[in-house]
Picture 1 (cartoon, one colour):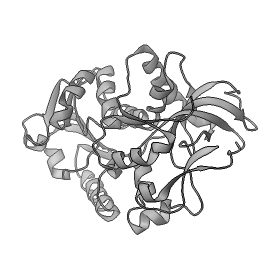
Picture 2 (cartoon, helix red, strand yellow):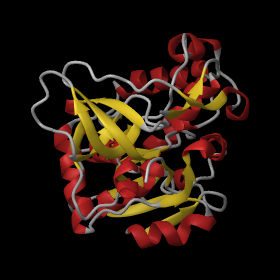
Picture 3 (tube, one colour):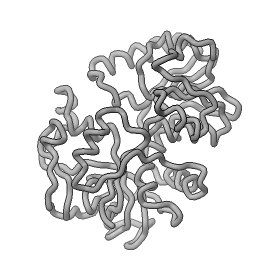
Length: 324
């Protein structure tokens, strides 16, 4: 099968190759998917580039590796113990090696793709939409009528977060660049702050929930604009150019200082599960939720997609069309 492969960390144009490799074999409770579409995530870029030595140690490939996680396609075969899916079923979710014609996924990290949802839209959804959902609903305990600030509202997670904020009945203020202001308004933001002109941390507004996808303000700055019992949820901190030392150092300081505040500060990584994927699938099918797709690529154009994702200029998601 055709796949994108890398054997060492580095710039995508130097380390990624388009090759013919062996088709993976599903293990127990795993599903083999013929990938119709996949999507790019910031972490895909970070893992491929390698970054600091610790990142390379933790995530660097020790053998040829196919990148990519978000996928949508058709079940080609199932491993022993699989009960939810059979060959021919259309599915979407989290897979290993999604930038290939076939990929393997745990049964527990897949959901049935609604018939009315395209493979592109389904592939653009899993990690970004579940990060937004779990961040707002589970960590942020979002409620109707609340004032919610979404920082980094035009990215993959942010565009889903703005829409989900509206679904939950919140009043959403979005922080993004001027070129993306109309986009986030169209998704449901009631107010948009252009970060190049206005610093939200110096404003008079107070927020019940801050969903921070940028991590570029101090603990004190965010605390200042939260209500007395406000909640700040951090996610997507790996998107930026920070070193691991700076990133984890800032996180530790925030969590320690939060122990002495009535306000809540937390960070998290989304957990891919069938129940939440199915819920997101229902919202997609009803038209309540719609992925924002900035650009589309073919499989052999993945290096270009990785480069563009790494510029931090992508609006919404980048989709890879794999098999017709």
